[in-house]
Image (tube, rainbow, N blue to C red; front, side, top):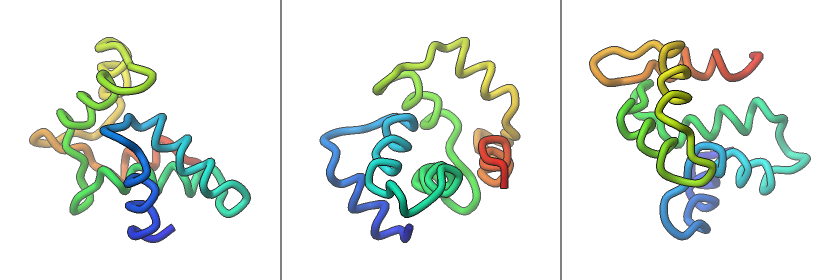
Length: 100
């Protein structure tokens, strides 16, 4: 999936979405075209800038939209992430989430 394709899918949604909603959207649109790992990787790449994901923005989205995560759930997940100066290491995060 190219960045243009990902943006086109995101443009179909009114307002912000959380990670789970984004994965579901990508999976629905890409059914049969990608395996689950590819969809998950593309979803994280929508948040990624220069190999990093802003931790506070990511936290807020997980706790605010869609199937909301609790602060405790987010804290548990974030404890596994490599975070430096408020930025999540995207490559490490993706490595945690997919089997590739």
